[in-house]
Amino acid sequence: MSPKDICIIDELEEMLDAEIDSFKIDGILKNRDYITKVTALYREAIDLYLTDPDGYIDRKESFLEEIKAIQPPKRDLDTGFFFKETVY
Image 1 (cartoon, one colour):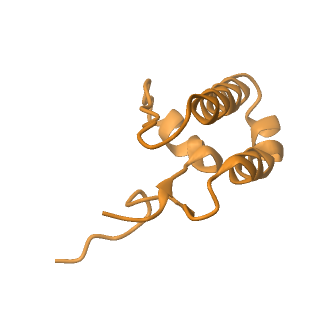
Image 2: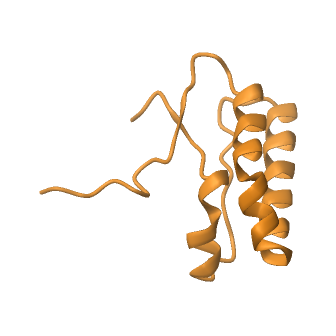
């Protein structure tokens, strides 16, 4: 388990290019307002990438900053295992 929350709003290109068509936003231990805002930001980011990839690339850092602004102070963000190499 990790004290960090997974956030990939600024890394959606690879998943969308791989034709992943659903994402789960886990709201455990989060209030309704947080979930509503995060879901809306992901929806906006996904729609922008699908209609204007260059526009998404220009804006992706601000999507991340918007999520960081509403993130609880003691819960840092991370990309989880998406970019980490598994070593056995």
